[in-house]
Length: 408
Figure 1 (cartoon, rainbow, N blue to C red):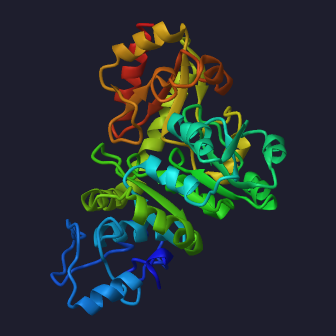
Figure 2 (figure 1 turned 135 degrees about the vertical axis):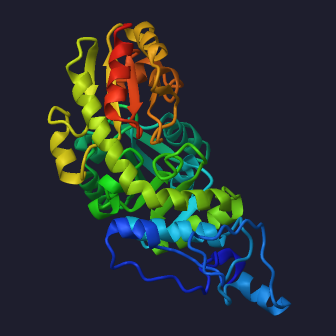
């Protein structure tokens, strides 16, 4: 196998068979690699490179004839363990980890595409994702069309003979629209395109895009997977063929590699992911109910409530609501800022999925680069707030939010 054929980094190391266990068990045990010392916690292989027994073995590693590790930019035992655990939990054939969530999105979008290809994406997405679709891809001759992700007819009408990729988030950032992944996947496949889904807001606990028909799933592991504000990371999950044909060589040669230390931290995060997300979702639901009846809240959006605009889709494809709540404070930006500055317990941050409850003002942070009319089209008003539920007691959080609203 030549260098250009992207040798599979999978080492010849025994990995425990955990596929028959339930998902929560796989989050703790899948992909575990133990050294000769039999450690309980996964070992941290904090190394740049690897040594070989002979020049012949070194050559065989690079041709792919001798499975094993070569260089941590290509793969690393700790990173490999994280990839294996994520793949098994997600139900994917393969996974590759990246340095950040946006590195995962960019790899999943850019690596398979060529000049002359066309992408269709939902308008409602994270500002950096929209940059990749609207600004970055066209620089390489890849055209893009943005659609109202909730309108299936718009997806259908946007398909061209050269359409290769659909991209969406669901629930969307920050307005928590829930798109019909299965229906959109059918449209994509009928047109000869693949569907890439950013599943961060749902988390792998509450939504399984591959089971719904998606071809590729991406995560910012920085969010719920770490979940404790410690490190950055991302992951691309798909079929073995997609990973080998498009992702492996792209990552190998361009270098958005996940640090072994960060991979180890993320492995530890996966062990508690289910417990944390379930508690955070319960808290988010309670906060949504409290805010929905508050006189200073003009609009409340939460996927777990019956009044969510896409409640039927939520019920069909999600196991529960989200850890995120969206709401609009009456009075626009001035009153939204007054509310944010009055919070004592809940912290202002553009991150989410953390053990600490966090709030942000999307119009001036995550989506500030969009023109006002584009934000208005997406429902991101000057008073809109995105709230990420943490692990604090829900009553303390509700009291803090209500007290801050008293300042509006």
